[in-house]
View (cartoon, one colour):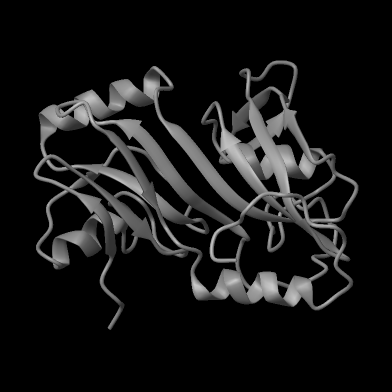
Length: 227
């Protein structure tokens, strides 16, 4: 029997929950975060989606009125969405950004001059022999944005199958090394600042440990989750 969905923040109007990898965010073809919550006696609807292969924080509404207000926050880009990622290769600057326009077609996304403006910021948390650990701020929220931007920059996510462009994963990961680490926003009703974090799941901490098994380069002065 699957483990219960972890609720990392909650009140009568909204929840932030920890979606495991391998689970859809919304009800559809197969088990979903929403259906698993319902099995736990929790009625809530996801306000945004994470890819099936991505774990981490998902914001859910418990009332229709709150869902509309939270959707407004996303439209206005009034939430801070921070991700943890492990990408292949080295040579990235300590911090930077990717602004490749993205076009979505037939269940795929690609960089295209015809695409929508897309903006991803990153900073290096730690460097390894064959991989680099990143903290990522998602400024826009296009389909598969982090995955496509990283691959286009020549640093495909560890565990990437869809956008790796035929390059071999140096760690041969069994899952995608991308995790929605933190959500931060102002509660629409109370006005309080909400900062919710989902700890790295064991399979990602193990993957990071495997990356550390090689030669480790100088570590920048930042703190990564679960270090």
